[in-house]
Image (cartoon, rainbow, N blue to C red; front, side, top):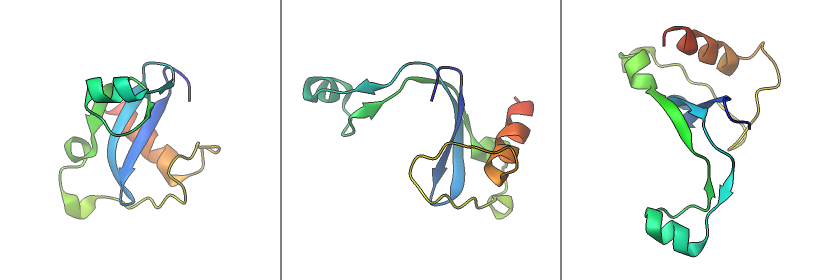
Length: 92
């Protein structure tokens, strides 16, 4: 991931949010995690957070996009996730 890249966040194979990477990768120390109040160690600053429920307001129309891994780069412009990011980005 690089600063400026769009990232599709999914929850249980459904789109949740579309964000833009705004900072470099940070491995959070125990002190940093305590200060931030988070349990996870791997962090990136994001901006332009847009929620899928604001983009597609009827949950019956939500599209499932199964992903085989937790973090997966989009290597092809032919995929369903890439098409969704493109459509969603154009409505911003």
